[in-house]
Image (cartoon, rainbow, N blue to C red):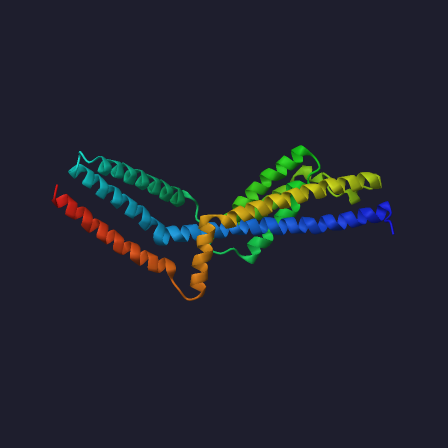
Length: 258
């Protein structure tokens, strides 16, 4: 049986509400994946990453010392230059990680709830004008950043700021606009549903790329090993400390022959 316009509007509104909830859940999953990856990256650097940077620096010193002993050896000179470049890159990466604010130690249910509430209220796809969409987009960037650093209070402050803004008087839901015809309401619902679907596609693509990254795959591998009772990062740290000791001895041996 063919639906009446009012019945079709009711169906479209119901579908949009469900899709909006799915988008918010996907936004939360994406931001949680980003935050958990940042947590792991910091833990990895503090446990083993900094040792790799030290190894690269020692390797560069060793290569330079060997090149100094053989100034006519072109291969030794090239190797020394490559080692210096690798040490520079490692030091730069280490500096970037150290300069980043530490991620939250724990993503609490309260933090997730605060994010979900903010996203439900501020999501750009709920805007009816381009200026309002841009305003909401800017607010959501701040919400995302606050979530990534575990700042629940900042999220709650942004929600309060949004609620108190006079522009909140904008009517968002077509079913709340009494003087609009059903056809116009349906058109607006269809437009917003399309926006939500596009955003869902964007989130899913970004989440896929995040999960395909080397650091995310390493995170999963390490966490699985730890669940089995292993300590892969601790074991690797011991190995790297041994290698650092051997490199220092090697550098001292070269220095005695200069």
